[in-house]
Image (cartoon, rainbow, N blue to C red; front, side, top):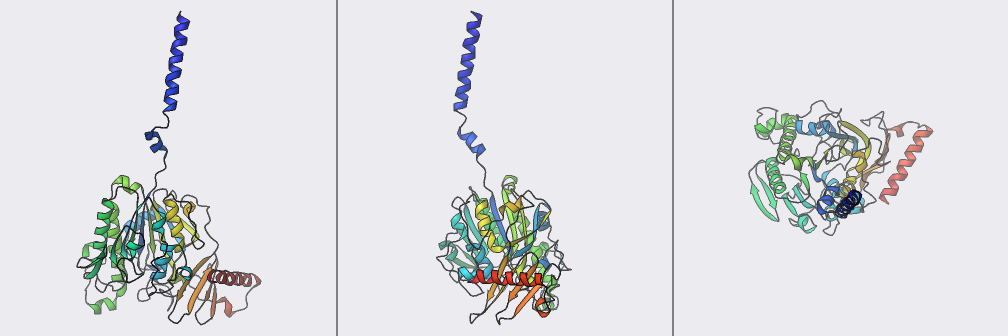
Amino acid sequence: MVNRNIVFLLCILLLVSCGNDDNSGTQDDEETMQPSVPNILLVIADDMGLDATPNYAIGSQKPNMPNLQNLMANGITFTNVWANPVCSPTRASILTGHYGTNNGVTRVGHQLSNSAHILQNDMPNYATALIGKWHLSNDVNQPLSMGIDYYAGILSGGVDDYESWDLIEEGVTTTSTEYVTTKLTDLAIDWVEDQDQPWFLWMAYNAPHTPFHLPPTDLHSQGDLPTNQSSINANRLVYYLAALEALDTEMGRLLQSMTAEERDNTIIIFIGDNGSPGQVAQAYGQGKAKGSMYQGGVNVPMVISGKNVTRLNATDNNLISATDLYDTIVELSGNTTVQHNDSESFKDVLSHATAVNRDYLFSEVSYVGGTADFATRNLTHKYIRFADNTEAFFHLAEDPFEDFNLLDQTMTSAELAIYNALKTELENTIN
C-alpha cells in the first residue's frame, strides 16, 4: 500500500513538472530572454579637431572637458576616423550612409535631396530626433519630411550671435535669446524625458563654430574674458576653448538628466564633423586645417561609451569613416539587414580589440565649377589628388603632419606599390 502511494505521489509531481515546462514560454520569461536594444545618443561637435580634444597628442592647449574625458575612461577613443573637411558633406554621409560622390553633397551649399533614404528610416522601432544644426537644405520641414520624428535647431551653418538666433522647431521659426548650446540641451532633455520607447537622438551642437562668442561664465573655466570683437580677434583660441567647455558642461547636464536605468541603457557616440578652423588650429601648418584634405581637415575625434561597449579606457587605431556610423547605428538598433557600399559597421570593434573594420579611407570636397580634392589612405600612407590634378603622397606613420611629399623624391618599390594601390582605390571609389 505504501509503495502504491509513493508511485501515486511521483506521478503527481511528474505532472506538475510537465505543467511547469509547458509554461516555460510565458511572457515574463520571453521578455527576460529578449535582448534589449540601447538608446543611442550621437553628439556632433562643429569644427572640433584632434588638436582641440583632450587625450589626443596633437595640440598644446586643451579645453577642460571632464564629461568627454569620463566617456573616454569608460569607452573607446578612436585615432583614425575620417570625415569630410567641411560640415555639410560629413552630415550627409552619416545620414545617408553614402559618400558625397553618391549622395550629391560634396561641399557647403549643396542640398540633400528630399527623396534620400536616411538612417532613421532603418530604425522603425525607435523614436528619433535631431536637435541642433541641419545645414543640408533651406527647407524648414525637410528633417520631418525625410522621416525624423522631431526636429528643432538651426537650419543654416551657424548663428550670427550665440545669444540671439533663429530657432526652428517642428517647422516654426522663432527668435531665441538663450545661449544656443544651453537651449539645444534644454530641448534635448525635454524630448528624452517624453520618450517611452527606445530612442535615437542626433545632438548636433553648432559649438564651437564661429563666431567665437564667450559662453556664460558658469559653463567654462577660461575666466572672465572681455566680449568685444577686438579682444576676441586678439586671442580667438581661448574663446574657442570656452565654447568647447560649455558644450561639455551641457552634454554632461543632458546625461545627468537621465535616470540611472536609462543612462545605463544608452550608448554615446561623440564625434567632430571636420577639423579645427585655421584661426584656432594648433600644430597643423598653414592651409592644413578645416577645409583641406590634410589630416588637420579630415582626421576627427571620436569617442564611444556606454551600453555594450566593453572596452574601457581603450584606444583604437582602426580606419573608420564617418560614413560608417550609418550601418553601425542601424545595427546597434537591432536591424542587421542594412548594408551600404560606402558604410561598414564597426559594431564588433566596440567589444573586440582585435576586430578590423576596413582597409582604406576616403574623403572629398568639391568647389564651385565642378573641381574637387580627393584623398584616400591605408594604415600607413595617404594619397591626395588636388583639384588642379597635382598629387601628394605621405607616409603618415612617419610624417603625421604631412610635411614631406614622397613624390618629390625617388620612391622605393614598396612605396610605389602603395602609391599605385591608393590611386586605384581612389579611382574605384569616385567612378
